[in-house]
Image (cartoon, rainbow, N blue to C red; front, side):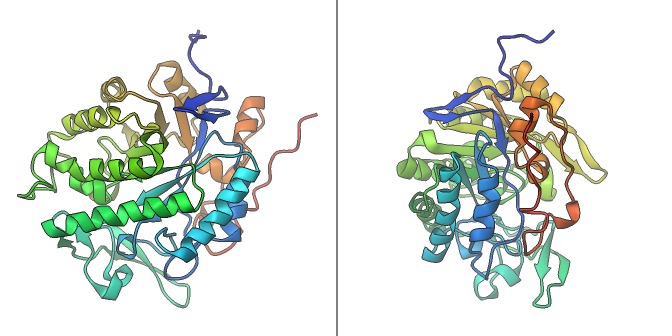
Length: 376
């Protein structure tokens, strides 16, 4: 029998003053439908996110902080006036529908290709070591091609303040666009995760080597965001022990995650978002060690958002019952069930997604999943 004192998915949640009507969050989902080289969103995205306004919190798709931060086709950015205007359409629609929305900000680092970089320059990374991952190029004729990531160059010490300012400027753009807050993407082997990695980041300056130095970029980004929004409107996404995009494991990974959770906890952030599955060569290959999750929860003073359940709603509720988290971010179920909170609350059957339309140009597979018929 479950402990009746533990929260249910449809219970309300307070994110340091932001009232969420339920604990069913929309996970950040890359859908590759932004327009132009810059990646400008518009009415298509406004319709998409507004349809999902009943989620406790919407976390937007990953959004570039600069032109250098890009690694995929048709992903959005947030560093120009046109991008601000596009995202303002989205936030206005979400708020008009009664919703709440954070933007997830990212820099892909070495998981990129020279075709996406300004003037065809190499992608940047903590060190000049190529990723074993692949990226997708989209050609003018619409054809998609999967190619190896390009060889990166190491960021110079004197470039780091500029990188932090790029992030801070994107956060200022997020506020101008009307977002309720920002999520710092520090997961899945992208730039911040690359700096956190003991297997990769062996820099000899203050940005690498020791755990303290490897955390410095993440904490600098978080503090910059907190100066714009307040720490209570800043979340962080981590993938403890994950292996997405071929970032090798290291003997101090767990200790690094403990230290990160402690430092983030001191800042009284909105939440810590933990992606807790990892992708191996044979597919989904299990969850990270539950003891580490509990330790991070103990060290982080604030709400924990869990992600990585697929269709396992019962498993998500079970982890809330066991005290591992306070909310759950659903991805694929949010694609095909724009009214997911109502469906789960009423036991309405869930719709399945069409994975052939995850990425595309139009509303097909994006805005055409209907809500369930109203209950009698």
